[in-house]
Image 1 (tube, helix red, strand yellow):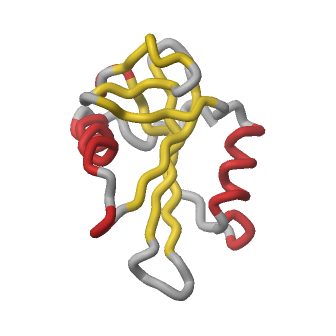
Image 2: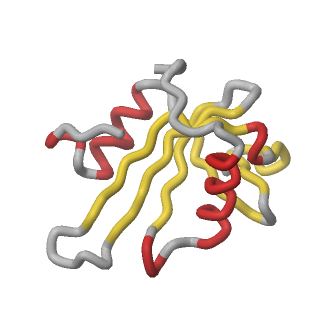
Length: 112
């Protein structure tokens, strides 16, 4: 997880990841991950590696928390997915990413 002060804003982290080739915007529906630009191609938890993640907390409201994941699929698609966490977490995305972590496919640095 990155901890540099200049990278603490979601916009800055997304820009940096985009420059590193994480250009797909991912979403989860019905237990499958897909790149929003190609909804026909989907991935199961076994097809996805969490390369990195970044947590953000609102300065004025501790309930304003989100997390951004940098992901890579088995066929080389690189992108990001974000979700609120804590009370307002999006359950489909969180459950999918938990399955990826349970498979031991989290925080692989080999792509950086």
